[in-house]
Length: 462
Figure 1 (tube, helix red, strand yellow):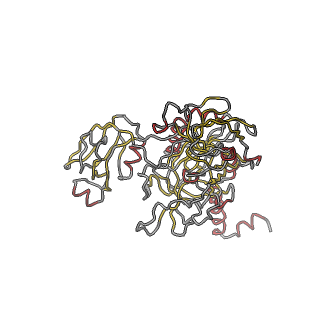
Figure 2 (tube, rainbow, N blue to C red; figure 1 turned 60 degrees about the vertical axis):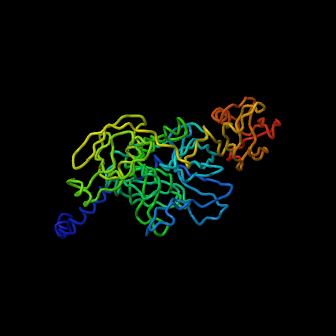
Figure 3 (cartoon, helix red, strand yellow; figure 1 turned 120 degrees about the vertical axis):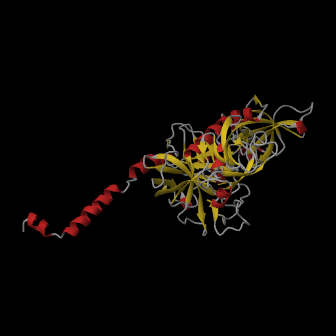
């Protein structure tokens, strides 16, 4: 039978199904090129702790049927290290991950995609955004392409690469479910999270979220779960927020944020009606904190903030992260509703006071991983005419310093022949120390000086 006659005898509905399926196949996204080009810049991170402790459940004791769980195995043995993911943001060894992956670690080990392992220094960490910046001593590393989360659209395809449950370079995909989510935690809502349905599990934390152009648009951070595993809701830190944090961590090791100094409340339909609003929107000021920028302004309790520095406040949760990203000491225009009427205010934004849990970076306070110690500048309690300049050891973890015999309370006055006068200088000297070479370090212990010998061993050579 001729082919033309055969085709004419095929039912039309069969032809339509074939054509329809072909169209669907052509429209479905293809991820292989993205994965091939991006995987080399994704790393696996292991955080070792001298006394392993499970992470604090930030929602313990709250009357919540479900909770956000950090990506750790919270039932792990005490001597077992925690693991997560990260990605290389510059060829000279800077790596971005989540703060909760490395929080409290005595040693941080980064495994590259080519199986090399390196001990990482903690450049800085920011608990409020759950971000940490690491540095390894390498050059010419593969790097990810940084995109923008601002233009990300709900419904857009996204891809995650990480190490869930230790399965390295695992790839999962999904779509953006929502943007600008605020999570019910104590962080002050300084992160407008990206919500996705990408499968994320313990070990993915700190890994990159890519768009179809192969550019990083977010950092996978949290999940919403009843079981402890993935249930269809995952949350990523927008890359625009993360890169602002990175620049500050590189520059000074900590992050500075704008501060207004108010407590706010969500505006629901009934409140909107009572305040004379046409729709529920804005942030209702319920309290003004003493000695705050808000107290120094004309802002009042009962004002509803509708705009801050030209940006609309649709939800009360929008305000904290907008204020936080505003440069301190800048003067901004604020639109409020007061007694049913719109009013324009001018407010000078302050600097968010440092919190106790904010850790200084290795550049300012600690050398974490390579030497295995924390150091600080000498305080007033250590000043005396008999005391030499130097830095004091505040903590000893596993590593070369402990092997060399350093103790907590030792004052380091010289390293590799260079006099030590401050923590930042100490960090710079320590970063240049060669590997597998005996290095003299002079300490003062109980007002008696002595020299010890310290040797840094690369983790790959252990």
